[in-house]
Amino acid sequence: MSDLFSPHEPPGMESKRPLADRLRPQNLAEVTGQGHLTGEDGALTRMIASGTLGSMIFWGPPGTGKTTVARLLSGEAGLAFEQISAIFSGVADLKKVFESARARRMSGRQTLLFVDEIHRFNRAQQDSFLPVMEDGTVILVGATTENPSFELNAALLSRARVLTFKPHDEASLGELLARAEATEGKPLPLDEEARASLIRMADGDGRAVLTLAEEVWRAARKDEVFDAKALQEIVQRRAPVYDKGQDGHYNLISALHKSVRGSDPDAALYYLCRMFDAGEDPLYLGRRLVRMAVEDIGLADPQALVICNAAKDAYDYLGSPEGELALAQACVYLATAPKSNAVYTAYKSAMRAAKEHGSLLPPKHILNAPTKLMKGEGYGDGYRYDHDEPDAFSGQDYFPEKMGRRTFYDPPERGFERDIRKRLDWWAKLRRERNN
Image (cartoon, rainbow, N blue to C red; front, side, top):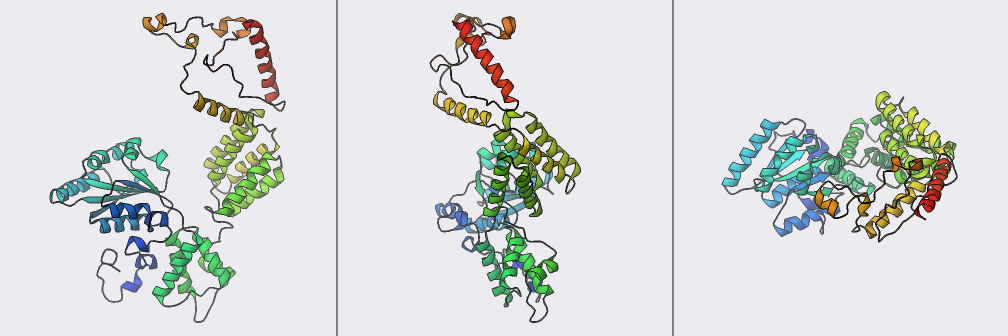
């Protein structure tokens, strides 16, 4: 290992360092699982080859190599490396780092500043990076497990490129285990099924798979080989039924969604419980239930969305496992509710029309006229205030004149939308009468 990751230690100390630390890559080419970034044609490989680096945000789950890649990047680009964590750092710490970077820049060397958990900084703290990014004092590399679109300032995002780190797949985790066995000089005492189970337990986390491997080696007696059941007892961790980032995850959520859409509460509850049992994040399932409420039930039962949001709040209040019952209740409610995708279909149709006719102005009679000039241009002329009209309905046309009236929303004769259909039909009749 290079001095970058292996400071000089007394004899015998090397083997006491965690396996994940001893197996840190020495260059970008050795990084596993992120070929789209560090492979021969990877984004970071191309940046290094170009001789220029810009600020970046590394977005991905834990154990995918964000910190390691940042260190390697600074080494291969010849930059000074500074690291801080947003969890433990404040404004005073940032000022010290910026001052050091400015002094270093005066001597001709630029600084790569790696900020772990950057989403933990508040908006004002995030803004403090902007001047030193703009004047080249630092090249910022921020790491986050959260969606940058929601957690980081727009100003910061506009100055940094977001690079996505993917969870390790089975192949890259297997490669890490093979490297570990070569480093230790002995195979893992696991049969084939147990080895596959250990990889699933890591759930895409490279650090986790190496930590689990260390636990297995510590527990094994001479010539002992563990099967999957024994492995689970040793590490006290269940292998997930599916990898949350892979096909099993999407297959089960698809089965859940289609069971709800198909009005089968028993099948829907079965797939929901399978995902609970596999360790799926209950709030992820809550979000999917909300999506089902607006996509497949819609206004056939307006309470569906209310029920799903209440279930999310109940889970937040009760936690796991008690709060899972609230999500189960919402799931059964959705499956037994009348179904309608009329709003979903209307939304897609309206969006296509918006893209096609996005340059058309609304008719002048429905535009406000706050100035004399606008009044002179005819803004607001002829507008009829609906509340002053019979039945509180004027029947005016609100679409752009060149576009003409369109129908996007077509409610079915089911559930609450039966009443909406009656109202729309009544208004259509009045519109025809009053416009003729």
